[in-house]
Amino acid sequence: MSQLEIRERPSPNYGSRGEPPNVRPINMLVLHYTGMQSAEAALDRLCDPEAKVSSHYLVEEDGTVWRLVPEMQRAFHAGVSCWQGERDLNHVSIGVEIVNPGHEWGYRPFPEAQMRAVELLCRDVVARHRIPSYRVVGHSDIAPDRKSDPGELFDWPRLARAGIGLWPPSAANTARGRGRGVGLIQRTAALADLARIGYCVTTAAEQVALAAFQRRFRPERWDGLVDLETCLRLHQVRMAVEAAQAAETVRLRSRFN
Ligand SMILES: [Zn+2]
Image 1: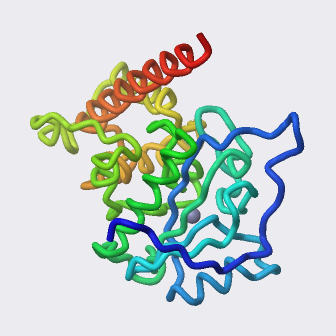
Image 2: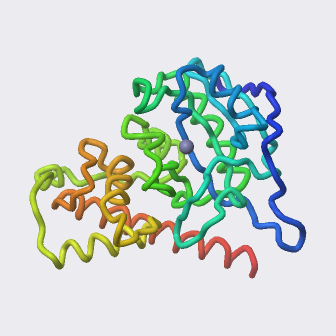
Image 3: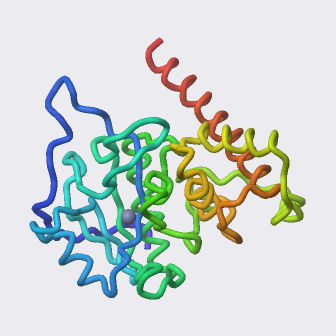
């Protein structure tokens, strides 16, 4: 499959992205799992006016892609959320729901046909809106106290190879630090890295934010504890974010000169 076929299933659940001159540009992609027992149940809910939830797209396990809300409209998928200090993320994001029963109903691997469709869809979205790699996130990254989707089985490295989101290669020796405790200085540095990457960390919710980071970037263990491997991984991801941000700054500057 090289061309993506998109079916229409319009949802009434959307709003405006704002009135000119206050329209914020689309510059973020949020990936979810549906967390429901079937694709049909998820589609029904995302189109139910009572539920007041939606997404722009839904990708079934067989790779079928549905459009529920046009991209120029604001879908209701992120809820109370925060990334890089910014809130109201529905205004600036595209939301993609990926069918999976989720942790509540029997979390399972995402099939190849589904991942292929997710990759094609996201590659197109990211290219058209020029969404920077450090603004491709999972729902749990932006709402770690409430959400765990798309979860630790989601193949973020595959998407990164296709140019969607970040996946810095982890050094071969970092796994040796898994479960190994660290001192206060390393812990402080780790939390600073976490915030620099984009996680909105409150003192009350440090552990859930760390667990969200681990699900995403160190999925072998997501206990929310700061072990040595987590420290090293945080540093790698922070460096990758900063490099990507510097490249984005150069790109924007050259565009305006
Ligand atoms: Zn979600």
